[in-house]
Length: 252
Image (cartoon, rainbow, N blue to C red; front, side):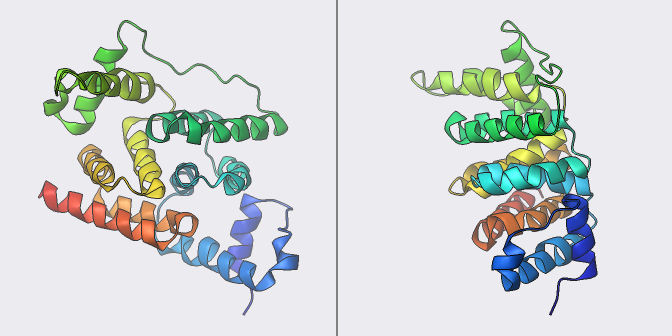
């Protein structure tokens, strides 16, 4: 068995003129992994390359795959993901994974960009102010989840109501309102964060439902899971698939 021509060509497009040192130390592993991840998985569906790499970057942040993220970031740029889109993926990770998990990926992104000659800071993408971020965030929630989210920010027990308000003004008002990614792309990367993170299946099911509602249909989400599987493994991929099926069942 040898690395297929398709896998070789795909690898070369990701990493022009670069050969992994693992081909010297772990040739059997590289052969099987490359043939799976860069041939069998890629050819499984018709998901476009740019979306595939956006999903992979988000999944790598979610599973804390910092070494692989550093490797795959230039590949994502080679396949059409824009620097602004990469930064938006990393920024939005803060809301779902916390700064403790997201900060290393912000540092890696800046280091890779500087090495590639991408000038920093990138053009600003914020559209809200301190005064209107809660209202704008609420509107984003309504656009994604439905009208039932209109007053969610002021619901719940008094002692924890502030967290629902933070969801509106911080999670959605500070991040989802930014340019660089549209709402469908933002919901897709949130789905990838949570699928890769694991242990938050109720939230994953909720965001699977939000994806379905905003136009990322069942088939699309299965494609996203499939393309992320080599990077997050089978258990979390199967969990994500179950959450998509549960969300689709609830939407009927």
